[in-house]
Image (cartoon, rainbow over all chains, first blue to last red):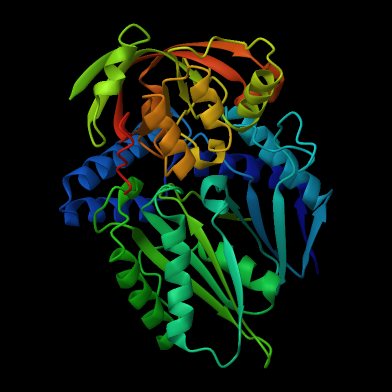
Length: 281
Length: 173
C-alpha cells in the first residue's frame, strides 16, 4: 500500500521551513555561541560574539533574515519507498522556496546562467533526494550563504594516506578560509564515497546537531572530530578573524564506504550563521 | 571610540588607526561584484558614473528586500576580497573608504596607503543587527541587478572596526 502525500503539503512545508531557517537561528548553534562567549577571554572576540548573539535575537524578534545572504537553498529530501506524491515533488519544493522567500522578504540571490549571470531570482533550489525504506517523507532546508560555500574543498587522497595528513588538509582548508567566511565556523567533513558523494556528505554534516556531534558515530570518527576541533581552535583566527580561541564551534564528520584505490575527503565550511530547519510528513 | 560624519568629515578618516572602533553616520553607497564591474568599466571608458566617487565610502553589501514597515532588509557585509581586482581603480578615482569583511590583497593595501583611504570591517554575519543603523535607503543605479544594485544608505552610528588604515597598517598582518 502506498501512502499519498500531496504536492501542496510539501510546498507549504518547504515555505514554512525556509522562513523558520532564515529567521530563527538553530538552538544548538545559539547554545554553542553562548558557550563560546562565556569561554572567550579575548576582548574583541567577546564583543563580536555578543553582536552575533544579539543579531540572532533581533532576527527572531523582528522577523528579519539572520544574514542577508539567504543562500542558494539546498533541500534534502528523504522519501520512503511507499510514498506516492500527488503532483510533482520537484516543482512543489521549488514553489515552496519561492513562496517562502517572497513572504519572508528573503534575498533573491539565484541567477539563471553562471556565465551570463543576469537578473537574480529565487529558483531553482538544489535538491538532493534519498530514497529510504518506509512511508515517511523528511525535508531539511539549508539556506547556506556563498561567502563560506566558496571555501569548499575536495581532496582525493591515496588510500595509504595517514590520518595526520588528512587532519592537516582539513585544518589547512579552515586556515585558508581565515577571516573571510564569517568565523566562528562549523566545519562539515565528508570522508569516503566518491568525489561527488564526499562533497554531499560534507554538506549534509552541517544539518546535524552540533550539541553532541560525536553521538552515534564510530569511536575513531568522534575522536577525529575532537582532535580537529582542538587544532582548529588553536589557529587563533577567532570571530571575524581578529583573534581569539573561538575559530570553530564544531567539526561534524560523515563517513561512508569507499573504493580500494581512494580516500576522498571533502570540507564544507559554514559561517557562524548556520541555518537549517527540518520537518517530517 | 571615534564618531565620524560622512561625507563632511571624510578628512578624519586618514587619521584612524587599524584596530580603532568607529561610529559612522551619514552617507555610504552599497556596491558589490556586478556594480564594481560596471563602475570599473565606466572608468575605463571615461564615461560618467552613477555617483561621484570623490570622497565617498562604498559598503560591500547586497541587502535583502525591504520588508513592509522597515527601512531595509538584513544588510551585513559581503566578502571584500572579491572586489580586490577593481578596488585600486576606484581609489584612484577618489573613493576614500570601504566597508566589508575579511582580508584584502597586497595591491589593495598598497592602493589604500597611496590614496590615504581606509578599509573598515562591519560585524560579519550580523545583517539583522546592522539594518537597525540604517535610517534611509535610496536606489541610485542598476536596478536590474536586484540586491546588487547601488543604493545610497543613510546610517547613524554604525559601529565599524578599522581593518586597514591610511598608512597601510592591517589588522590581519
